[in-house]
Amino acid sequence: MSFLIEAILSLLVLITIIVIIYFENNSLEKTNYIYKSKKIPKVFDGFKIIQISDLHDKTFGRDNSRLIRLIDDEKPDIIVVTGDIYYYYNEKIENSLKFLENISKKHRIYFVTGNHEYKDKDWENHKRIIENYGVKIIDNMVDNIRNHDEEIYIYGLKDPAFYHKSVRYTIFEEELKKMKESMDEKKFGILLSHRPDKIDIYSRNKVDLVFTGHAHGGQIRFFDNGILSPAEGFFPKYTSGMHVKENTTVVISRGLGRTIFTFRLFNRPEVVITSLKID
Figure (cartoon, rainbow, N blue to C red):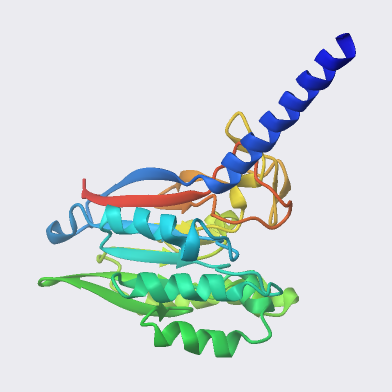
């Protein structure tokens, strides 16, 4: 009898663990931030930005219907995609391309590359496909978002994985400097970059607001801290949240998919929603 009870309890524990892991990997979590700055033009007060990062071919419902519904319900002014939309070696890449195609029908999208786009041997072809959807890929480019008679900058950094390892971050920062030199420093700007751990580079170059991803929230989180990230290794500092250094604010998405481990734990897939406010 005691053996039967132990077996039933063990089965219940196993089922509970499976349910928790399934929930942690398949239920979407919204994180809302308010970013305040005196540089934000009046007509951009309340401007809503949804960030999608590190999808890695993950689907939430058929053709990502749950994710798309969440985005549509929020009615964002723009969507920013901060890299690793797919796995470079995954046959399910069509999941991510279909997602971009579907959301681009209703929303304005800005996109920068991550390390998985670099590893994709067919990236140039996929890039053309994504651009044909109307998505703006702004690797090392400056663009303007116009609202009535006012504008703000939106600009992006190509992922440093595209450069030789010995000069990777030198070129990364040089490209940022070039873009900053072409901009009016009095005008508000939003930077898209895959890398959250380069906060010193962003701060040194007086970036206002940066959207980043890459760290996957540390994959497994305890006490609101990540365990492991691709860039910083074990017990990383930059895996989630809004971080401020001097006059630079870095928003880090925990992402939606997974890479290092086959599951996420205490780290639900995240959609970041940031509203601009005049300070």
